[in-house]
Image (cartoon, rainbow, N blue to C red; front, side):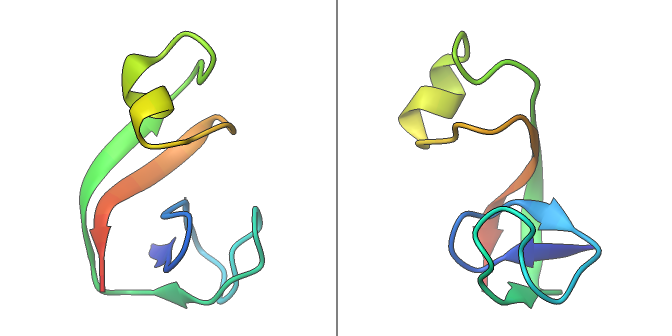
Length: 58
């Protein structure tokens, strides 16, 4: 699993399927957003697309 260096979305690809930025193997903290419109956490982190995200990526 890799995380986007910009939006922090987790995927198996070398580039983020959401924003196209490079991904990194060096990440920590798993966050799953199912309903971004109703999630306070998603709003705080500016997440608009449901999916898996990391809390920190290097």
